[in-house]
Length: 231
Image (cartoon, rainbow, N blue to C red):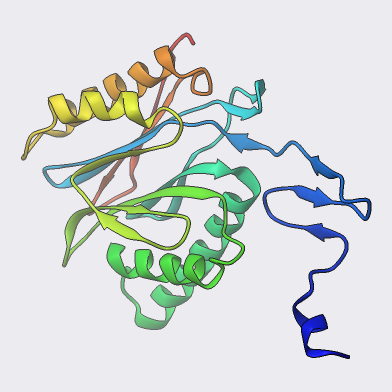
């Protein structure tokens, strides 16, 4: 075999973005199940609040009105998902397993930033064929306090006081920039989350069907809530 043969791609390729290149060089674009999404998070006094819409789409088709985009990783740690559903669900399973093993071994809750770095490493290792995701990881630990991380598809980690990810993020950011301030109460923060996601549902056709909210504190289970919104 010649050396150059080693770098010639195969005649039929399937990649994560569902592009199928056939032998006749005809490129076929397959539909994928993605969440055209609004996910929002912010830090308040002694807690992190995360909110998402409930709509999943396939192109212009609403595939689900009850999609779960807000997931518990551990009692003190939650994650929101945007992008490809299969990729996101796989990463949720992996992160749950890895953080559980960490906690069993060390007999203490994993730090939010440690869980974020673990997830970042998984994403970075697959950067040549990246997972189609945008993630928010939020939680509260004894050492760190309330912590919110914006984690990109290639493994970037951006800590912030508030952030939004998804097709409706631009509309949410307008609300977050205008309303956020330090030392918000949980009640004030929850209202900002509702307003931010609602503004995206109104303007973004891929977001809708209500708002899921999780209020994550240092102690006890997160408080979950669902706000019904038309759109």
